[in-house]
Length: 300
Length: 280
Image 1 (cartoon, rainbow over the protein chains, first blue to last red):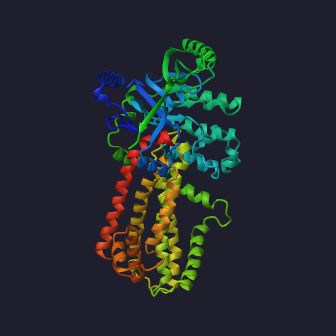
Image 2 (spheres, one colour):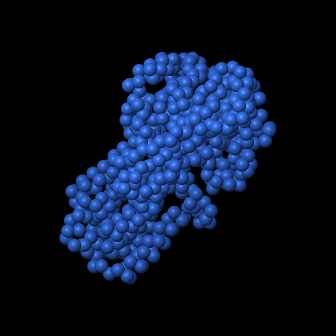
Image 3 (tube, chains in turn yellow, cyan):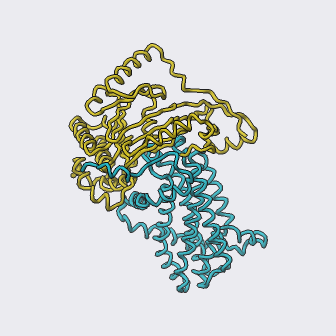
């Protein structure tokens, strides 16, 4: 994930940061500001995807093209554009914005699921990603086996998971089913187990992407209680949601993201107001093509 | 427990720009997630035998049955003048299967776990490692029925049989290296799997797995000395069937190929992996 001069993303060469004094200065400022009280620092982060207009994802096609020297046309989609964001330890931040605004991409960059195309990210502490609950669950394995497998994916050993196991099962309320294969679980039960494992890791930073829209109301309440408990221990919360009425209860600040740009970062009420205005504007004017640029490149 | 300020400085910091040498960084991460590799290997085993009545007995029984069939078929159809032809073929196929199964599983494992890689941070190399690990575990379980069959068909057991661990280990390393290259290519190009299936069967017939190398002409035979799979097979056959020490130059080349494949595979994989999330 480095952004050094040789960082080439799909043939798009990024200008090295050293040659851009302004950007370099910005990064340095972020680095200085990343003290022990800062949990997350996002510095000038850009994420760009390349979407070929003709699909070329076979080796054969690629070889044929390089021989015949035909051009490859593709569009470039900027999911995030020059995002700067600092989150202090213990803060709870809501990320709001329309569908496809880039909220989830930002969470993924912070959860180090993907590196930024440009810019830099600093994250301090153990991250509990709840981007989708139960990722990596295997239907043929029992609930018990899945707990250990999922724990290992979060970086925990067998012994460490053994210590957490009872409380995980108790929280998920699945004592009677824990030795049944996961394929016999309902989707709600799977989500409960997923949340129980993901929230058991005693995280410093909790990243939640609408994970709580599963399960019945009683369980949702339980999840919110658990999140509040984790926050009381001093953990930082990053929370993506569309239920803007609820965020005041959980979050101190909100960030409004639209078309890959950070429009506002601050008070929850203001962010929600801007978000609503944005929604009405978008109803009148549908075009959000600004982020898509046509790039035609000759491949050698 | 409230986290005090003093602890804050000790918390691990992820810095997306700090990873200068991805190859070295990934080694550390692979080691940190070693529990996941073990978990994934045991998951593979469990899932495979879960719904069968005999359960784990299959781990031993199925290679024994397969090998039994092979012994009958090959000693009846092919009549090479090789001594202990059945054992000769079994050694070859056992080691070949580690390579073939391992490399194919490496690709499907990495691409098949894209749902995990898109949602949480896991060093991607663990999926390649677990695919090769599963192939190695299968080999280890097959060694017991293999030893029984070798003894039954008249091969004299010697202490050199223990040396079989070395070619098994080398072929695993080699498969890991090749699997790393293939799986990182499979992320970018979906037809890597099909192309490899064809190349693999070509390679199978080019390598003296089911026929003795002496059947080849002198030129091809000389070239086989630089075929890593032939070297692994020949070392294994020397210790099992002849019960003697393998040639030093063969051991040297085999080790060099195995380690070389690993180093190259690791460098290719870690170079490509930073963009996996964009393609998976």
